[in-house]
Image 1 (cartoon, one colour):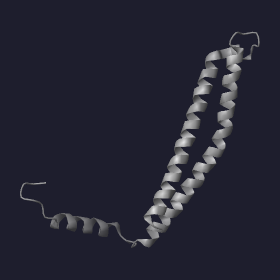
Image 2 (cartoon, one colour):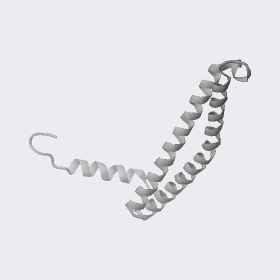
Image 3 (tube, helix red, strand yellow):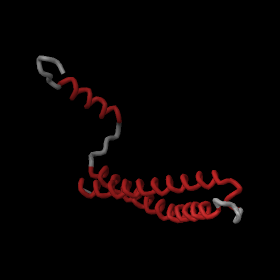
Image 4 (cartoon, one colour):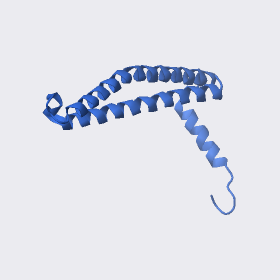
Length: 118
């Protein structure tokens, strides 16, 4: 897997994640507005009945759109995990974490800095 494919997969997940969060926020806003109507939302003679019906329908619509958005996000996340696993498999496997730490310490200690400091 090359970098372009990994980037495309990451962007696909990010877009699905943002979409799902927006739908969830819309659903929570509508449910909060519905709670503000209180018992008036069920009274057909109340002056706010039509508005509460509209908000209830919007909340229901958002809830119905949320499940497919979650599924799409999870599928994109699985694809991203698969791409990362393939990319990691192409890299050299290190058996011991101390090897990585030792190599980093050696690289940092042999680095030459300019005379003026960092």
